[in-house]
Length: 469
Ligand SMILES: [Zn+2]
Image (cartoon, rainbow, N blue to C red; front, side):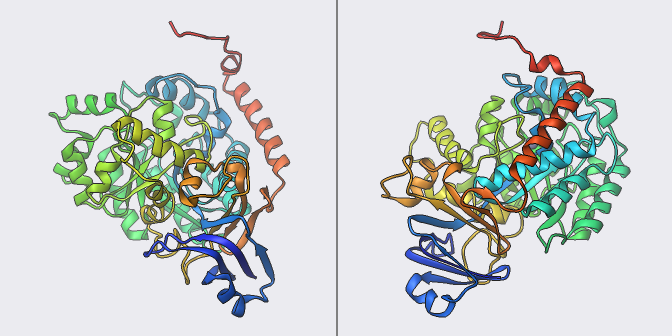
């Protein structure tokens, strides 16, 4: 299908960072074929099958989220106001033991829908709880159906440490984890017109053996995919590691021991507690970072040193993280939080700009996901992943500086149209590929049943707590 989007304010995020007033973008099938002034683009593409008048709208590259755990949609708010090391072993882990196919399917659809409606066209989901094998296929089915571009980064837990004990049902054999991810790669990569792919998604240093990391690394190379892992998320876990390994942090340990893990196809998630040497190693190995500011604030994990990373040439991208530690999947809230957190933590309002934040959420996200030749900017030849944001709204008007207003004023509710791979997935703020009401009813039903199966109804009935003793 051919689409012409015209009369909008195009923010290309191309290498010249062109911004085009009265701009237009032409799409044929899954590709962008023209970008420029409306009067120029219209001459050749005025007869497109679908013409979208984007007057009063910003036309931006689809936003890119590099980290979440969709199954946590089911657990939203059940573990609020806890520390990571109480929150996961005390709530997320025990509930994840009871996951069934429908839970994984409807939660992936709900999370994807929320992301899409906040302007996100591409996400990486990190799936690791396998009370039984085969649950991850439900996420991939969901992505194929709803129309989002997605990487499913799949891992598993093969290590048991006393300070982060996994439920027995989630503890897996090293080779079985690798076998399952390889199966998923073979069955799913390139499905959904090329939108869906599988990567290796390790859990964290304290949840994965060195043997597993190396086997995942070798297979990632073999199948031409990337990998990700939570890394240096909390001060406690880094200190614990230093105690066990002669003062080395996890990053220093892997690097100095020569363990095959870090590298240009690796995304480190969080990277909050980083010393100068950790940062140097990340830069030297060309490892990428997924910064998750809302989750880091929610769990009081700390602040990722984004400006230092950027100064050192490290690619930083943005992640909403799971809906049980955010608790939403909203890209606009994520962008604003990114800016505010850096400013307040450095006491420096110039520590990051609105333009850089938009880069983190678009082209830098694409680079982290090894897709910057395909997505992340509005350029001829790239995949047509585009978001239209309505600027004629009480929370944005009057229009003065569009990029700043996208980062500091806009909300998901201002997203009008979302196009993925040349297909309109959200129109006038509504999902077009599936019934929104059906997804919400189904996920409610799944959550009700999961809470009962897991025996955690009491978490829903938590009494009013004005102060924690
Ligand atoms: Zn995570």
